[in-house]
Image (tube, rainbow, N blue to C red; front, side, top):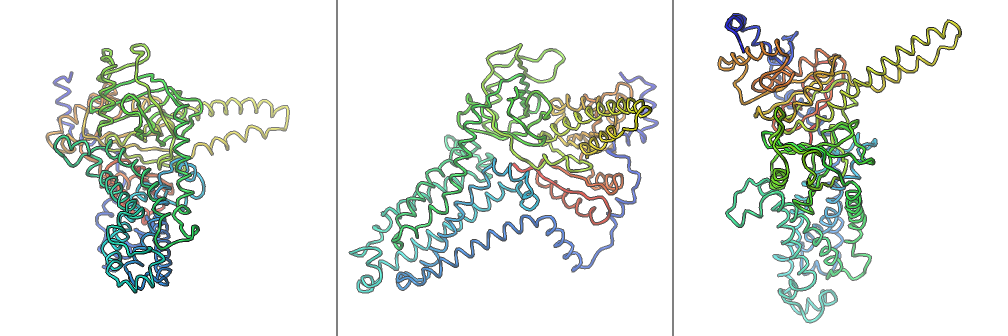
Length: 625
């Protein structure tokens, strides 16, 4: 309760309290003002700066994509000129050359498209030095880019055959056909229907149909239910439709191998190269799926706790298999056979490697997650009085919890956080999940560091006594150097931006744990609630002042219900990064972001601008889903 004299004090000192929720105390406003007031550069200078920025940010992507494009050009050109020497060119013309050149790129891309989804291989490779040159975090984007190239290749290949060289063939004179093409297409001269209904034609048409279905349902509009169709056609939208339709590619690859073995113009077996392109990628991908199948069978877990929080967030805490070893920031796949015996969905691991359990936080964003929540709603019980969560279950309340299978862990950008001196973690909504594990891991390291410090001091005292009687005093000096190596990260700043106040419930335990145990001030946390008026607005002034008073009296924020203060509206990212730059001179700061792409562009650009102006270096990383 706020008494009258306290309210009067708040109003008289409102300027002081209004500055209470600033994320950082800006000791140097000049830096941010200078960033806003830079002199306008010339047009050529601005364009060159943008070009340098683009190259520095994307050089890994550029060289990989450039190599890929050059390989496609080389394959297309090789096959183009190879078929120019054949008799069929004299009848079917350049349409045939274009179709065959496109076919060669299709064989290459149909093999290559499997590589970015070999997650175990990518997780292993990213931990090697190859990760310094190859952007493994963009594996799904590269997968989509290859799919786009396949679409173009299919249009060129099928279009040229059906609309150009087949009509040229059937309209050629009988004498010309017998002289040039009889050995390839047989006698008598085939009709258009004969060409289409042959093995090569039927397999080609079926592949186009299946690929069109899979490609269409994999687009963002269908996969995320952005297109609303009337019943019963609404079943072809959503993640389930994408998941099942994508497995049509098993049939596509079988048809592709058959298609490649019945070519009209190639008669020697070793020149039918389709199987050569596909052999290694298909075997590697099949091996990965087999590994996942057996590993998931060994990784059956037992549910320990379940909670459903406001905002549609489901928290699952499960037993940790002995062989399951992971790094903070990585993710794993989860399957619930009661919802679907085939579907696996990726979720960031929110428990720390040192915890004796695994946990994930799942938000309702699709049909599978909604079905999962409904399933647990039926078996869970209401929460105990005073506990957060709409529904709750543990071993004491329910024994008949649904079975879960897990597979992983798999690599993600956030797993490399320990390479940096300072961390800036930015999460939007459910995008906070990759950083929960990192914060817990840092907290565990803090506790270990304090225990090591105590043991070092005890060892030092013992060594002082031994030095008096012996000159051998080299052993104690080794401990501090080892400790320094394991504690590269000195500070972490976590910014969580959310629209829903209820979202604080599912993160409350982590925030309180960090605030209580972080006595050295290594981790600085900030919550931002964007559904409240911007700080400084008269409508939020009273909330801010009462918030400050309650935190001063009880140490608890009235908005989040935690020890971490809540700010209103959105952070001013230029000010946040500028302050970090001036506060941590000469440091290497890792900026990790999980959320909407719009803010990712802003943060990436700010990191680049600040890297040009000071000794502090920012490295930006974005989570990809």
